[in-house]
Structures are given as C-alpha cells and as structure tokens.
Length: 288
Image 1 (cartoon, rainbow, N blue to C red):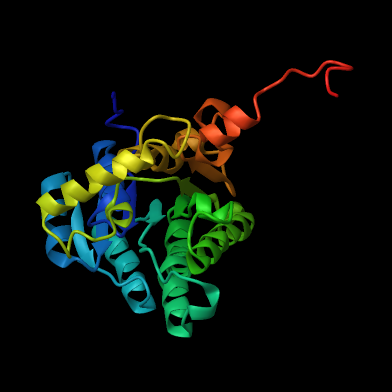
Image 2 (image 1 turned 180 degrees about the horizontal axis):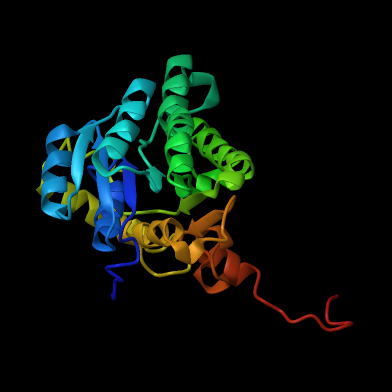
C-alpha cells in the first residue's frame, strides 16, 4: 500500500481510544501521513508505548472520555503543544451492556451511552472552538453499521451508534460555517478486541492473537468480501476524511463493512433456502 507521507503535513490530530484496535491503527496512519498526533486512552502504559513507537512527535495523554474535563484537557494539550487543532477522531468505545431488554439494567444502559455517545458530544463540543480558531477542521466519529440497521448489536449499542450518526448530521449543519466538517465512519466486523471479546489489558498477546484468529474465521463469511475487516481498513477511510481530499464531504456516514449491509449473495445462503427455493427467471405463464 502506498501512503502519501505529506497529505496531512502541518495538521494536528487527536485520536481517542488510541491504545488499541481502530484507534491505534488510525493514530499510526495519521502520523504516517504527516500529522502530529495526540493519542488518548485510559490504558496509559500501552498508549504511551504506542506513541513512542509511532514517533513523528506523537504523544500520549490519559483521557477518560466520559469525563468532560479530561476531554477538554486533551484539546488544550494539543493546542498548547502544536498551536492548533485540525482533526479529531472520536473513537473510544466498548461493547457495552447486552442481553434482552427486560434484563438490561439502567446503570448498564447509561454507561454504554456515556462511553459511546456522550463522549462524542464532549469531543465535538471542545474541538469546535479550537478548530474554529485554526480556520476549520475535520471531526470523524466512529459509529457502526449498528447505527444504520438493527439486529447486529445489542439494544444499547444500537441506540448509541444511531445517536452518533444523528449527532454527526446535526453538528455538520451547524459547524459548516466555520469550515469544520463532521462525518461518521461505520465499520462492519473488524478484528479488534471487541470482536475477540476481550481488551488487550485483560489478556496477553498470545491469547489475543488466538481469539482474533477465531474471530477472523467466523467473520470471513459475514459479508461479501471474503475476509473480516482489519483496523487498517478503517484507518485508511479516517485518513481520507481527515484530509483535504474530502473537503466537500460533511454530514455523511462512510460505511466500511466489506458489503455487510448488502446481505449475502444468493449462492452463500443456507442450502435449505437455495435448494428449496431455486432461482427462476420470470416469464409470463411460467408459474402455475
């Protein structure tokens, strides 16, 4: 893959949830394209090591995205360090509470929406004045295919991701006058700790690799493209949205799902369907 190492030169970015998964891949990609990147996460040691490994001036700061003061402090650090803010990837997340609606607790519901939706509100709120002072910018919010269709994720996760898309559209309208673009990225099944069912802080690298390999096995048949998505697939799309190449794109949902939302090709459907209901071309009088 050829990467333009100057496409984001001179730009300053913040990535939340940057210690692993999509956030880590995005931080690497933005830095590789020339941006100065502030990685934020609650996994301090992993995040700090990653920033050092990325180089190009990348730094790490602890940030719990459900704490508004932490989010505001991250924005201030970026501005104090580099004098501007051009890109924010509101990405931090987790699987959230799951289960039948009647057994979903109020606390679990609230914590899921706090991490997945309220954090995006905080990130957008505090990025706005900094980007306005910089002459504009690009805010990219990690939503999900679950924000476009029900039945893929849990109730709380689905509601939160629908909310991210709604917030993206609404703020895109408001902030366009400041040359601030706001878009959502909607991943399908991606080989991250979320798919593995554990975070990197909970298990060692060997177990994570084993879990991800199993996830790639079931994930390869979930969509048209015959493989599970990788964090780098999402990072490439985020980098495009962060760049001036997408300067006329705002208020959109960029779906990067390998064709998941389109369903499955007829030949991949269960045999009970394809054998019992064979495809027949319509012709007048051909049906009894």
